[in-house]
Structure formats: C-alpha cells, structure tokens
Length: 310
Image (cartoon, rainbow, N blue to C red; front, side, top):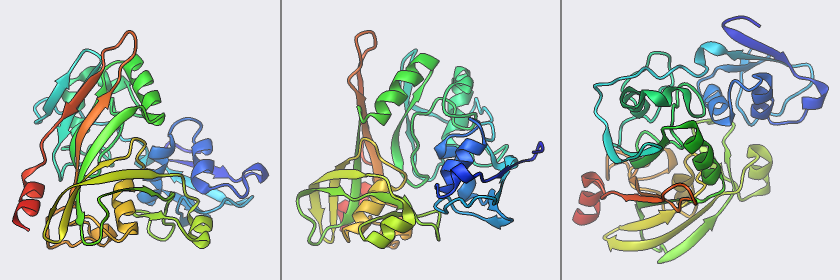
C-alpha cells in the first residue's frame, strides 16, 4: 500500500464475489458502493494490471489495485456560485439543479458542480454525508437531468433522511417525455437492473437469464401515468422512490419508449439537447420531532417546448 494506491490480494473467502463488493471491503470503510462505482467508471480499479469492471467475479490470488488519486476528491467550496434554493431549514435544504450541471465533482479540484455551490453556501455540510466529494447530499441527479435535490445540514438529519431514502419513504416524482406511440396510460416497470460489464456508463434492465448471470442485477421498480400526449411524444409522471442510477431512463428504453434526447439508451437526440427527465417533486412525511416537507418545481422550458410544439 502507498499514499497513491491500495493493493489487495483476493482471498479464498472473496472468490466468486462481485468485484465491487470486494473493493469496498479492501478499502476498509474509506468508500461505499457509490464511490466504488465511480472508481470503476473512471478506470481506477485494476485486476492483474488490467482495467476492471465492477461486474467481474473475484478470483483467489488476483491482485486488485485501486488508484487513490481518483478516490473521493474533496469538494472545493464556491461561496459565490449560483445556487437556486427552494427550501431552507436549519436541518436541510432542497435545491434546484439545472440540466447540464454535474451534481458532484469526480476529479480533485473540479469546480462548477452543484455540490461546490452547496458547500460554499452551507460550510457545515463539509463533514456530513457519504464522503468529502458529496457533502450533505442525500441522492444524485444525472448531469442531463434537471430538478430538485435534497441535502442535509446536520449529521442527525442526514442519518434519518438517508435511512428513510433507502427505505423508500422519501417521495420523489419525475416528469419524462418519451416515445408515446403504443404507451399505455399507466403502468409499472418492474425489471431488475445491473451494470453492463462491457460498458460501465450504462445499466442493463435484466430480463433474460444470460443478462441476469452477466450483470448481477438488483430489484428496480418504476411506476408512471401519462399526463399529456402531443404528436409522437408522451409526457408522463413517474415515481421511483428507491431509484438506482439511470433507472428511469433504462426502464423506459426497456419497454421500447426511450426518453427524448437520451443518446445512451436509444432516444431521439434531434428532439432535445439532453435526456428529457426532470425531478419535479420531493417530499417527506416527517417524524414526531421533525417537520415534514414537500417541494415542487415547474417543468423546464426545453421540455415544455418539446411537448408544446410536437
């Protein structure tokens, strides 16, 4: 082990496990699954000198190398950065992330992300959360996704909100614009999702036995109802309380109704300049000693124009 990397020899007890699980263990609490996923995506995990993907199975005796330079860069505070705050309380905030802005930095010193602005305005967040590059935030939105994001300002609020988020008790509502021809008025997409070992930026809805074996998926459930139809497009309200990365995008592609603009999952990129997904509502029922909240926001103009002008 050095200041720049961690090396770990796969033990007999690790053999057969997914590589990301073994890496979490090798890092001894320094990174959870979300951070380890980012390490794999950035090519920072090697097995026997080869760049690895997290779906690989560990083999006893293999040498895993994790490049620490890619691990958890600290978010640089930007006190003057623009931040659209929709709810501010002593225990939490709800902020609006525009499409095109990353939620958190991936590289040391990176600026311009939502988290840089958050920790600039709320410096107390710096010691709270899943890690130093994600201070305070309870969840993330893809760079191309617009909408509401929840962050905690105290360790206690992060504790109970993260617990309720994992339990599906924080309600989140999204708007999507997808291919509408043949889409039922409402439905539930209940397809497990795993990471594509050949393309780590993508996830795979796993239906066939081969996909399940290859991608080791986790359960994922998305419900929707169509709000409006316009030409080829359908505007739908979507709920996915425990949404995994890219879940909504991949689920709609899996039922052959990809989101407009979603180049990663087969959407028409001539329709809009980003995938048409917007986090429009987030709410929590509270508890005996903490007030509930519900925050909503309007659909952004690029999505409104697409459904209006179709």
